[in-house]
Length: 370
Image 1 (cartoon, rainbow, N blue to C red):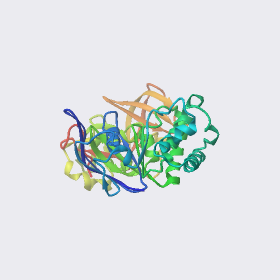
Image 2: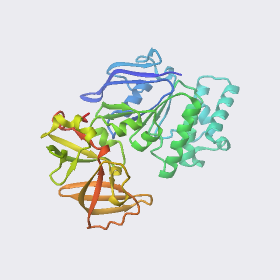
Image 3: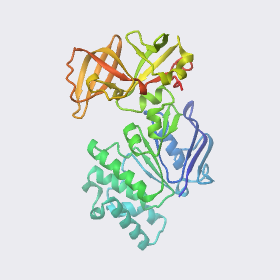
Image 4: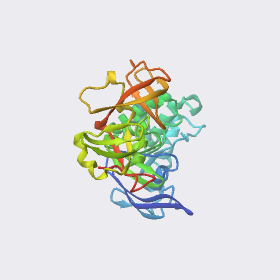
């Protein structure tokens, strides 16, 4: 088993920079998820680690060994791709055993490893079948099994669930998490789906345009995003943002969007005091916007008026798409809410979970004010 280090790693394709000075220390047995939108560099980072791409600058270490010049076959990693990449003419057993046969592993050892992996994944009954006789979820398990039999130091997963339907994706997600707990090996997992990242990861590396935005636990990313990009990417639906100014009055400190004004809780005033009179971006998550009737007790609430534009009944909750002047925003409210489209209603913000961002530092991606 081994940890992985990206040490000032950059990768360029001509004039395009896919990775820009990437620094990540992945601990032994950790489940790290690289997440971000398409083109952010996450798959490139994985392919550089696998040796499928040559880095432009920096070092990559597996354990204590620098692997920049080590061939892919000698890096002791196993990769599960988005496409299952199974040989159609081979049985499941032979697909899983193929890499071991190339390495001239003894037949008894191959049989032991394949059967053990099949048992872990619950595919013992499929070993004599061909890929065309399998469902998408079964093929994905075979692809994972082919990696398990290698017994590598590091497992790499490149969006392995994107070809599965929604129900199977949730089920396989749980299976991969259990697999990590059972194998106690380093997992590095790439996805654009932040729900996958939040539910599976020990830590998440959020990337955008080849640059690492934040590396932290799922809960810390959610509660304390480093900047506007992370705040908007982590969470579903995304955090709502409002251009605003901070205004000080005798009653306290207020966030003024022009359409509404909400009071900052007293315990946050000291953090934001230096921004009075300045432009800020006010952020509030949909789950922190409530129907006043069903608002949780004990929160610092601030009420605003808004018009209901669209409602989406989800069963256990309702998504409300609301309008306040020029501002469109989303609320996740109690399913007992009976607001109607076109109705002027009152909702309350849970100001304990508010976020402010400073556009004067970076207009494109303002950092959080802490």
